[in-house]
Amino acid sequence: MEKVKPALLQRHDVVVISPEAAKRLAQELLPQFTDGRRMMAQQFFQDPGSLPGVPGIVRREEKQSTDRIAVGFVPSGRYEGQRLRLGTFVRADEVLSVFHPEDILQMAIVPRNACMMLLRDLAIYSQEQKWELGVLGSAGLEIFTGQPYTDAESDLDLLLPGRSMEKIRQAMQIIGEMAAARSVPVDLEVRLSNGYGVKAAELLSSSRMILGKSRQDVALLQRQKVLALIG
Image 1 (cartoon, rainbow, N blue to C red):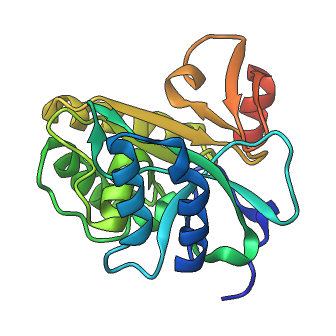
Image 2: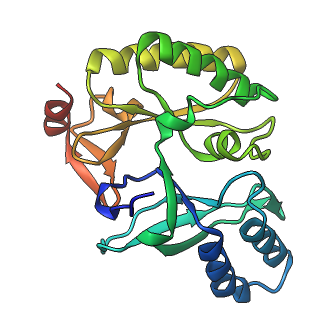
């Protein structure tokens, strides 16, 4: 694969790093743990299963680099009821492949609980309506890795491109109805053309300022400017 250009990556993208990079990260990160989290992290970095490498999620970093990428890694299990989240950096040449949230939603979904059943139904509807919907968080990692990241209490994090207010309103209404039928909480983020993500619920409110999150920062955006980006 051609060397990844960090500037082209977006928050929430999944990057698969090489086994060599995973070994390096294990050596750097494992010493900070002296309990069961050490074993979780060790197994995560050493056993990617059927994947060619270890998946991580692009995260926010204020000081952008031309070569390194801020990434978060999350093993599928829990330690004392909490997810183990490992924030670190990888080099661009350590990345084997990149997948966007909408790419992941086109992969096979195993409907083993309410969250994944809802996601399966939304994936079909999104394709029919040409929403280009993407999936984030635990559900996205479950699809990508085949590991049981979600459970009966899991909610669903989704991403929608901000290209049409009409489409956003339609998606919010239909997703809300389908989520209520499955009793699954859903959080829908809208990605703007300037790289920021905003909550769909906040976008459709009457608030003058809207909280936006990008790879670089968190900022309050003027509602009128946000709407101008969407059209």
